[in-house]
Image (cartoon, rainbow, N blue to C red; front, top):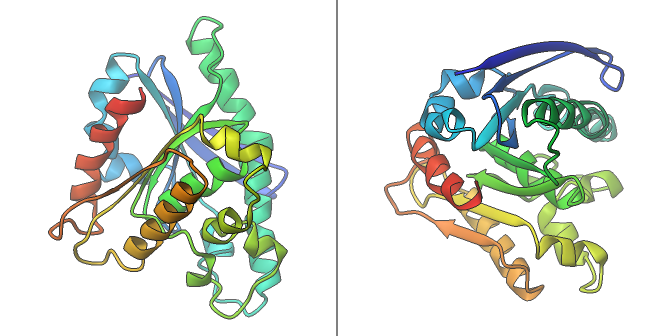
Length: 251
């Protein structure tokens, strides 16, 4: 399997950020790590191997990035505005620094062909980011496979809400989005997949997925929200089954 490692300075985060690319060609897939994770976690937990056939066949190219959760969503600071502003700095890093690099690398690897968008994916907190980035920037991202994510920012900001927290809380901003908003039509043409188990440690992710399903149905957005069985836990062995299953539908 072809791999490439990058370590580049982020002007938005004022530090080096790392990412690793797996594959020689195919649809670009941006992988967000689980909470507080690093770019190598997806590989170390067997997630790269579980989609190895897609990578080797040139159907997908994985771009595994670093997180900034420890300074934002996971931070125990009482300065909640600073926490969410730190996430916005990460957002600018992803959109203005990393995504252009992904498009450039992908175009080079695909003989000059530029895919119209990047697919996002991730597990747990990675799924939270995968869905949120797609919904906030549907002009950049073509779809998502979000596995066991939380989509209500109150889980991380239980007693605080401002404009930035709101715009990073899919349950809130999709509910508040007018039906004639131009993003709604874009969503209808994106591959939105949300999956959650009904077993151990899948609360409140299960409830969040149910609410997202209701909101998507109300706005006539054809998202696939899939609930797996009561034996399906919030853990890597299940995500390793889910990712290749859903990848087959979008790549």
